[in-house]
Image 1 (cartoon, helix red, strand yellow):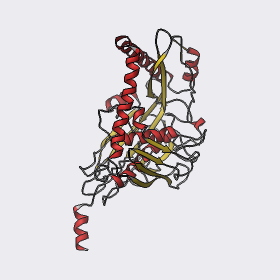
Image 2: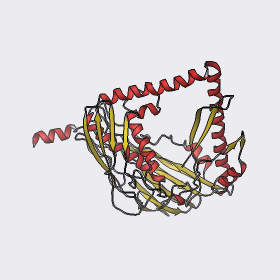
Image 3: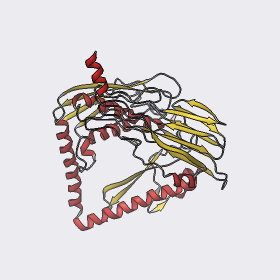
Image 4: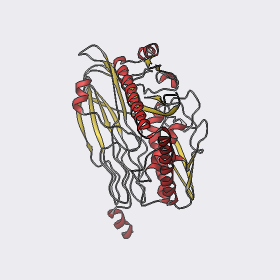
Length: 433
């Protein structure tokens, strides 16, 4: 889960000129299970809900509020350190922004903030203009919500009209019992990511990027759930599928620019328990990379994080030093990428041995329905989750929680990426036919 801290930048007269903000991941904010990503049916089971509230008042940290937060998490010293780091980051941002105002003047800085938004908007409009006018539909499915085996439909209609785009997700499934509901803000973020990829890297990412993009969702759907729905998986898993369906729709308009589906999951792993070395609680959380989709320009990448993941892997040395865990294997999952004229990237294999009794939760996708290929390219292999207890392997579903004993292992085999275009073998067979 993430916590966002926002702070104002004020002039000497008390006028708020700007806001600085940072958003940081916290390995545990309470809830049903270590890591705060349980198989929940309500947001109240997923951890502490923090409404907009002042954590710093008149330059002093509100210690009463801090105590409430720290009493509701499993690893309070870590959370305290992370929150203080976020506060320090904002204070640094305020200092730097104030220096800009002092050196260039308030009005100049405010004017340039507007110019940057206009600059990004102009590039986004040019990018949209390069897409042929028309309506482009696409659908894909989530495996399940962790409580039912029914696939869950995500559908989008992308309408391009000159330099404006409208994306309508209204035909997507209703919100579900499990935690893969994605608030409208997550849907917007995933759309922004895809459209941002259409413009040059040097253009600032800001609100101007989204001015030409209109997003329609249906209240009560999986992409705009009602208040109280479980949503932890929407941020990490459903966001990936939103990217898949938007890219799939755009592939109809820009076949030489859009890649096949990447692994489509973050393979979220949380492990928690009591560290036998110090008797203290620990909470480990990590996402695991996989293959990316191939494109007209080449094959997909092996064993990397992609799209909405936005994280790096924890170095094994740091992981084993910090937690009662041992990494027994960390390798490329050869042959898991989809076949095609260009092959999809391969996923990876990660084997974790727990060195104490521990609670484990895995939140993953693409265990049933594979990442799609494009234009004759084949789908990638689905992922696989396995628990090995006392030498006996047990295949697990994509979303599960369990308890492991010391010496047991968790095996995550992540999906590959889809292939692009017909392979030479397929073309030869077609000619023979």
